[in-house]
Image 1 (cartoon, rainbow, N blue to C red):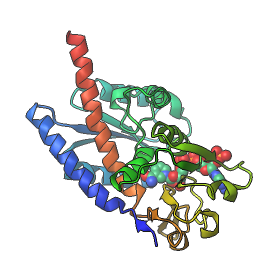
Image 2: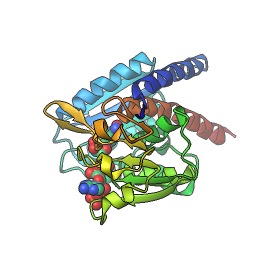
Image 3: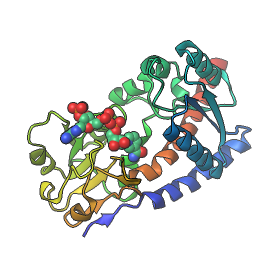
Length: 288
Ligand code: NAP
């Protein structure tokens, strides 16, 4: 029977660390603040913004929400992001998705200052994932790796299989896992014989959004499973993995809910604090 990798417990540890770091910034006269931009009235985004506000406030992080009408032009959205970029009291920016259809998501995301980009979506941060420079990593793949690190599971030298090559999770995760010295196979919707690849995994990451895609007969006994998939069915949140049966074969597994998704907001706040250090370093360079 697998060890259940408890995201909620790790999130609680992270929150305590964040509160300690926030206190240190307070002593230096910096009051960490997350700015969130919501364009339109997508119900899930509104609910997520409220959740973010609660998590931020419980970690003593200030929170600013800017909400724009659905018909706001792309240039106006960029102009509001630029105000947040220029605002020295706002240290991190999260643009909530989806955006209304008339807005070019990439152009808007490109306008966020890389050091304020708490979800690592800016091309500069994306580029540094490849190049290995100091950057802000996207929160969900970061969460997948953090759960393993905090559970004492080292992926160096292991065969990691990443199922899903989406921009949010799978694609950055494949490079981040290589940087952690795993040997990585990437699978997607065009992969022929998914079970053969999945069956070779020492560590299996899934980021697809198809409940029940991964079954017990596909995995190698002793595999470590990190399920980032989130799909809502009849009000219930499901991962990509058939948890009840795969946990019988795996050595460790993240539940859904209560796994990866439980720590992504905390990782975003960690990114916010990392961003403040990067912003302070930039100010020092300018002064000198
Ligand atoms: P996405 O962009 O839609 O990517 C999904 C990926 O799954 C694609 O690469 C797709 O392949 C692949 N795929 C689809 N069907 C497949 C199949 N039958 N076999 C193998 N691969 C298949 O999604 P995303 O934004 O990366 O998100 C992935 C999942 O993570 C979703 O469930 C999302 O809700 C979840 N998520 C969780 C968090 C969190 O906090 N835990 C955060 C963000 C996202 P192709 O590239 O060939 O189309």
